[in-house]
Structures are given as structure tokens and as C-alpha cells.
Image (cartoon, rainbow, N blue to C red; front, side, top):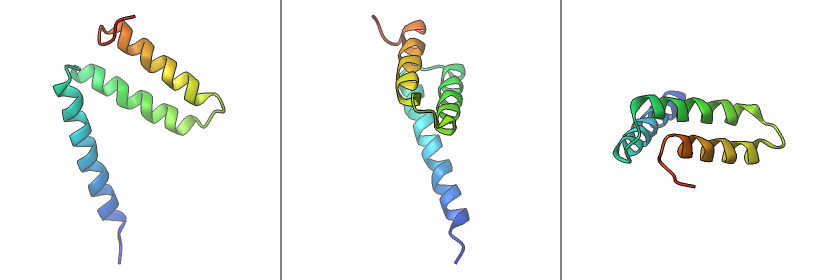
Length: 70
């Protein structure tokens, strides 16, 4: 049985739910797209320091867009 198409369907549904959740939190479509691109980029980077960098860049993104106050 080919489960590959099922996996893609589930991933697509999750992406829609995730995008809707971010929109409900007040993120704009541009911000959501940036977050998803950043996540994709960092997930495929596989650097030893990637976890720290990902965390700091995400915090900087939130602060610079007024979603988190320092």
C-alpha cells in the first residue's frame, strides 16, 4: 500500500491548521510566510549551533514585529 500520498495529505492539513493558528494570533500573511520559510531553512541547515541560532532569530523576529516585547 502506498502511504506516501497519505503522508503528504496529513502534512498539508497540518500546514493549513498551523497557518490558521498563526493568523488567529495576529500574524499577517507576510509574517506567516517568513516564519514558515525560516523554519524550513533552519530545519534543513543541520548546523551544530542551529538550535541556538533558530531560537535567537525567532525571538528577534517576534520583537521586531511587535509580537513580543523585550
